[in-house]
Length: 476
Picture 1: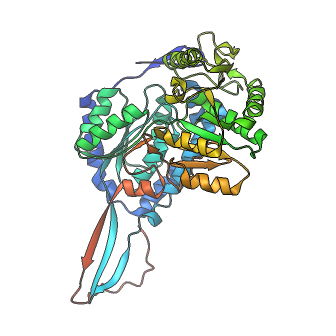
Picture 2: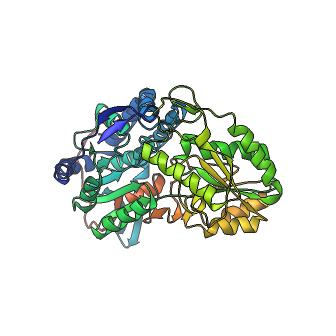
Picture 3: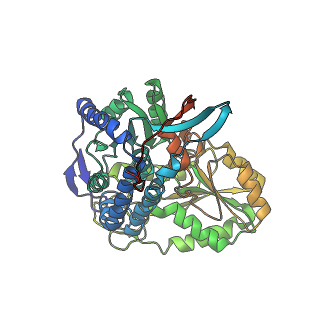
């Protein structure tokens, strides 16, 4: 498959797709490495994680440049992506603490019971195009720290970031076969899902594919965490700071050209403040510069021509359905190559829940305003949506915020925070059709996903003697 620069449309290379046979060879290599790595000491694993963390810090600008070139997002956004991935690496550096089991003495006379956490073996990671560095780092550092080996298939649209990060793993001292990269399409994905040597699979992508991955993987006897799509709502109450809310709507709606599973794509405005809020958002949109993400623009291109055409099609559907097109991103002046894949920030008002621009995940810079009469109507609208990934409320009323966090049927909630992605020591994941499986990404749920717990009950009838050794005890 050919690879193009989104800002210019220029073809810059090709991606060789692995066949099912090649994937099998890679899995065999990972399986051979799993026993030794799984039995390695926690001290050794932590040392590799700390070394990798430093290498990633030292090379983040280079990796961000690869992301900008192949995905299109602006450099500051790409750097932010790598930094958020670093947070998970830092979390995984504490693996000796996270893998501690429990111990109960004398559960019966002279009988003790304790638990240990052991690695699964080989695990698979299938990552999306929109975060080519961060999403793999949601999974790989935790899996590796827990003693597993990994086979990762990145998106074919922007594969270079994962390749670069894999080289850093090797430089950090990770043995051959522990982190393995394969490139491919559905054939490679199916090979990962079907291979009995792979014990678990982590996936991020659209809901239809997430459901497919979950069903096929679980039928093959694997653990699967499959994070799907989203339609994230931002509810703005009349008492909110409207300048803050307008800034947040623009930042969360158009950052990374809307190609985020946590992007705000629906602004739910109580009717009394809707006109004023839309005016403030429109004013801010007029200042945005769309173009080559590497050259100081606010918003970069769409990742592919097909994705751009899909977004333009939704804009046309919105107009045909009767929504008011306040700002038309098709008419934006673009600062990039004439063949670049551009759509400018787009704003619709008067959107209703039956319109495709509301029901479907557009995954582009299209913000839809839905007007409601009250908090309750806004809450009901959000809870009725099939997705439950992220949401936000903007208000200065603590009571309303507390009600919202308890009543909304969404997995990640922001209060005056438009993109509520939790820190790495918490876990990332949504509800309803935004997640298939029982485990969220990273945090303690990630540790539990990549380990199996074993309970041991023991009784020793005679004391043992370990001999004399006056040396200072050391970890190894």
